[in-house]
Structures are given as structure tokens and as C-alpha cells.
Length: 303
Image (cartoon, rainbow, N blue to C red; front, side, top):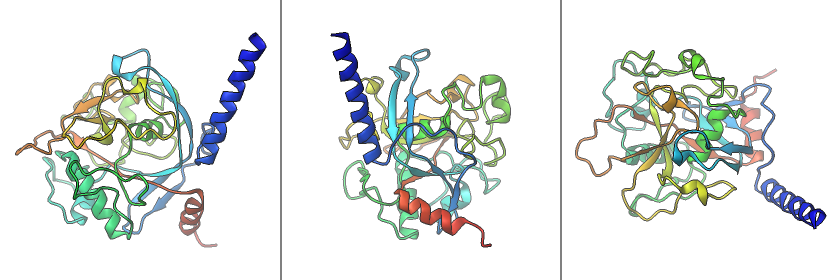
């Protein structure tokens, strides 16, 4: 009987591995030798986030962070930095931010819909198909489109961890001051992006500065039924539901900057005024292995 259970478990594990490889996912990457970066047609630096698996969430902190569970993701590109004032204005969108003294700072006071609008505008600028259907209630996301969108909660946490299973990719909270801007060192304001250390995959400001919008509707118990492969978040119903924000901000405690910490934030889409001056974002785009090779070849210096 025991041998039969072991055989069944092994068969299930091999089945999941085969499914992951078929979808461009695989075992968690050992840590990339060095960050792989590309620059988009509109001049935005992005990091190639490798396909892999990781343990998402935590069983040791807030109730909505559990249960801890394994998730597998395909390869995607993620903005190396949070979207800044100059990038937002380049998309011909009005800047809602409180701090506009330096164009290299991240935009904030950004409603969830405004972040999605930027994703669509940037997609059009670069000749991609927009992910968000602006003609439908809630602007549902077409994950099969090749344009830019907000990261899913799983993509964000995977990128933030960068192969680590610790509270922060760099270790413990004692090292947060050199890796992010938060309540203890930010001076009650945002800062120019990229002025704190990046994680091992080359991504900056995932801890602090501004909290970052994710694609997912916030549901405290979603992890109990979340898919294991490329989870898209709870089903959309067109409502103005709270959305997940990750990463903490300039006004957050160290604990709120943890990779697994979740915040359910009102979108602001139906608010006449939206003064939440810590809401920012960054974009992602899913890519195939062949597209990654092509992008990296273009980014390689000429010999």
C-alpha cells in the first residue's frame, strides 16, 4: 500500500512537471548568473524574468497570506523600475501625482484604471495588441494579447523574491534601508527610482517607494483555490472590487514591504478625488522563449 501511494505521488509530480514544461514553466531557476535586461521600442528598460516555480505566500504572518503554496509561471518581461513621471506623460496622460519635482520619481495617486490605460497606450506606441478592453465594464484583461498589462499578484511576488524564500530577497528587515524606501528612511516622500539596491534579477524598488497595483481582485482566501499554473487572480465580474497592491511604500512599515504581504486597495476608479499618494505601478509583458532570444540578441553589444 505504501509503495502504491509513493508511485501515485511520483506520477502526479511528473505530470505537473510535464504540464509546466509544456507551458514554458519549469523548476525554479537557480539564480541567474546576471540580470538579463532589454530596452523596449519606447525606451523603457525591462528585465527578463525567467520561467520557474516558487513557494508563494506565508503561513507565519497575516491570515490572507496563506496557505503557502507552489506556483509555476512562464517567462515574462517586467519594468526594471516603477513607472515614472516622464514615462506617464510620454503616453500623453495627465499626471495625477503629488510629488512632481523630479521626472525620475514614480507616479503616484494613480487609479487602477489609469494604470491600465497607460499599459494600453504603451502597447499601442510599440505596435502591440492592448490587453485591456476599454469597451467592456471593468476593462477585462486578455492575457493572450501581446501588449503590456499589470502583473498578476503571483508574477509580482515571484519577481520580488528573485529565487529567494526569505521575507525579503536580500535577507531580513535590518537590510531594508539600503534596498528600499520605507517609513524609516524615506522622509515622508517618494524618491527617484533606482536609488536603492536592485534584487538579484536586477529589479529596483520592489520594496517600498510606492505600492504597486496588481491585476488581481483582492480576496483574502484566494490562495485556498488558486491555480498552480500562471494564476490570473479571482474571476472578474466587472465590479469596482478592491485590487491587490504589493511592495509597501514610502509610508509603510518594514513588515508591509515583505514579498508576501498583501493589501486590498480601493481602485479609486469611481472616486471624484483620489489622494492616495502611495499608489504606483510597473508593467509586465509575457514573451515566448524565441522572443526572448530575439530581444537579447538585439540588446547584445556589437563586436
